[in-house]
Length: 98
Image (cartoon, rainbow, N blue to C red; front, side, top):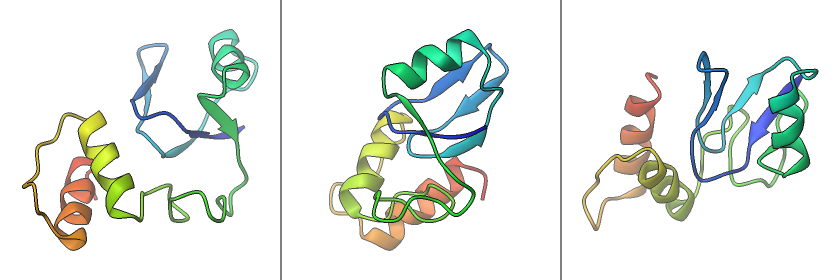
């Protein structure tokens, strides 16, 4: 099952799988912890095409300056106060290993 983390924080599943804010991942849907996160709205089911208009691209990466700053803040990554969108995207990409 493919899910998206809608929270402003990293979700860790079983200590082995990490889903960054606004990112998508393949998970085992029958896991009780996954079911709890789904019922609370932290994770939402998604399809492989991505969700249009959700503030992220097809890979779940934030696209607005506000969303980028929120994701970087949630990951504990510092950035200049007046950083451009391109600078924020570069920091986000580095943080995700892209």
